[in-house]
Structure formats: structure tokens, C-alpha cells
Length: 494
Ligand code: GLN
Image (tube, rainbow, N blue to C red):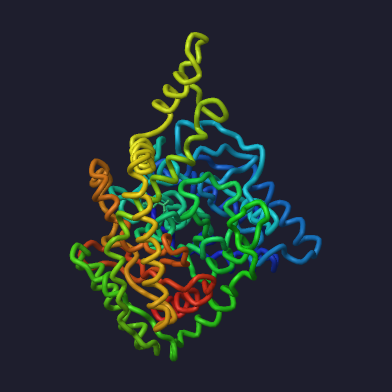
């Protein structure tokens, strides 16, 4: 029987920075490395469903270019050169279809690359394929993909989390050592927690959103995913930085996350103050998750950190605020999918008006969850309701940011659970949107406040034997702090 969890030996078991070092040292070629991951995908993905598209030829061509550079004795393009990456199918690429896991974009080919994709290519990172997700990145389980759900490599009857289901599953299964996700309300951190991988959401504006299909523009952020904190940091530095094509990208130096991850690897946290949010201890959290988080705080304290409780009373209102703001922005952003400009066009037989074709296209092209959000958002923004809903939600958003500011007056980093439970069975929550939304409670506050956060593997829950992630949160533009603590925590677990 195939084991779907990443093997403990062989090329595909190695962290990305180690693979890149081997490639530069001539111990192995990028082609061999890339082929090893392609073989693993061929062996496992019909069952896992992590990829919507595998780019074998393009990835091997990119690998050959790296091998030619090594042979010519040229300096590596980056610390991860030659190591393949799984790209969430929400970022546009010229050499593979981009679908956002929606029928409305089936077969769509972009005329340009997302800025992050350009940076990956320049860094010599072969893109091995486009990964599955919840349609337009709306969901918490991966089950909203219009194509097929992704399964959790740790238990094929369970979800890998969402919306970055495919990227997280690919990492956990050893199908790729690097991945890119996007995080609007938790889509990088939550699947990382459920699959036992690392995923970081940078500060809002830290990574370009140019070429990333918009979900909710004021919340969306692209981020790095991997199996170790150092690999995640190395990838973070490659993709981050100002981009003139994204008006919300911030023109300031990229936080020194790699140096921080290396510093953290010593395991010493003396002098570091770590906040524990009172509102994150709540009923409904699985016992096994609570136990792992308790043990994580005990470990951080043993490593020298001072643990301080912080009060964030407005976190109790994040769910309502997020789901009003997110849906409002969705109702505006998704208006462009009208059957006229991209992808699917339904019912255009010469007898129907443009409006009828638009309605038919959207009816056929969008899935239930996307339709639900468009309708919710349109309602929230309508005349007469705007003040009651959208404006109130924006007020809560400010209060959440204030809570964080007050907390960070007392502590350097905040730690806590990323998700209230371990991976749940496929089908468990799909007919209960509210239960699905509630699953995001611990990840949403950061997106409302624009702060960086990451999930680092913290252990296995004793009641389900499934992975649990520790979420680390830092102040805006201090992403390096969470990497330092994350790397120290990771080192302390060994
Ligand atoms: N689960 C959240 C939602 O469905 C977050 C998704 C995301 O981060 N893209 O909105």
C-alpha cells in the first residue's frame, strides 16, 4: 500500500535548502531532483488530488537551465535554485492554465505571469504544477474546488484544510518541498496546521498581489509554504518586496526573515516575551489541540521565553466582521467574471441578450459557496444596509487592530492555536457554512489587522493522532520576529 505521508529518507525527504546545496555542489542535478518529485506526484496524486495541473515539461526545462548554470560555474540565482515548487492555482502563469479551481475559468491561459511567478523564475525555482484550492480561495477544507477535493495525506478520509488544500497536501506528501499559498482569512496557516507543514502569511503589502486572482483585496496576501521554517524564510525573501504593479505593495525593506530563522535555530528564547491571547482559550477547541498548545507554551517557556496573557476583547467579533468585509469585496471583485472577458461563456447561441448570457454563465460557472458570498456581499453593500453592515464591520476591524497594538505594547510575538481542531472528515461541514466559517476563528484577526502570522508544526493530537500547528503572530513589518520564534520552537522539538 502506498504511504501518502512524506517518506523519511531519499531525495524527496530533504528540505529545500539542502537540496539546493546539493545541486550547487554537483552531488545531484536539478533535473534529478525535479524528476524525483514528478515521480512522487505520478505515484500519489490520483488519490490525493493536490494538483489541478502538473507542468512536467516546463519544470524540467527550468531545471535544465539551473543545471547548465551549475555546469558553467555561475553563481546560483538564489538559495533555493533548482528546487521545484507547487503553485496555488490562483496565481496566473503564461505556461500553464489558471483556473482558481472554478469552472468559470476552465482552460484559461493568462497572457502574463504574476509578479511572484516572475520572481520564482528569476530565482531558478522550477514550478512543478498548479495546486488545487477552494474555488477562488473561498473555503476552509478544499472541498469547494469545482474539480475534485484534495485529501489529507495523513488520513485520506479527511480534509487537508483550505483554501490552500493542494499546496499543503503536496508538501505533506513529499510531492514538492516548496509551495506558494494565499491567505485571506487563514488559507495558508490553516491547511499548514492540518497537514503538519509550515505556512506563513506575510504582513499585508509585503508580497505583490499582481497576477493573483482577487478574493478580497484588502485581506489577500501571498505567502511561502514549506516543510521547515528556514525553507519558508528563504522563499519569503525571494517573493517579497515592493512592486510598482501593485498599489498596495509597500515600499520598504523586506524584513530579515532568513537571518531571524537562522538565529532562532539556536533554540534560545531568553528575553523574548510571548503573548497568550485570553480569547483564544475557548470552548469548542478539541482537547487534543489544547494539549498540544499547552505543551508548546511549556516548551517555549523552557527555551527561555516569558509567557504573558494578553486580552483582546474584540476578537470575539471577528467572524461577523470578516464575513461581511470579505463577501462585500468578493461581490465587487468577482463582477469581472461575466462570460464576456474570460473563460466560460454559456448559452451564447445568438438568440440571447448579453445579460442573459452573463446570468447563464455565472449560474453554470460559479459553485454554491461563491454564489453565497456574492449574494451576501451584494446585500451587505446595498443602499440602506451599508451603514448597518459594512460600516459596522469596518469599525470592528479597527478595534481588532487596536487590540493587537495594545497586546504588542506588552509582548514581542503572540502564540496560540492556528485551528480549533485537527483535520475533519471529508463531507463533515460542507452543508453547514457557519460551522465551516467558525473553523477560521483563530486565523481571521490577523487578516483584518494586516499582520503577519505563521503556523509551525507543534505535534500530534493524542485524541486523533493528527497534526496540530502552533500559530505565531508578529506586529506589521516585523515578520522576522515570528520566524525567529518559529525556528527556535522547531529546534526545541527535536
Ligand atoms: N476560510 C476563509 C474563507 O473562506 C479564508 C479563505 C482564505 O484565506 N482564502 O474566507
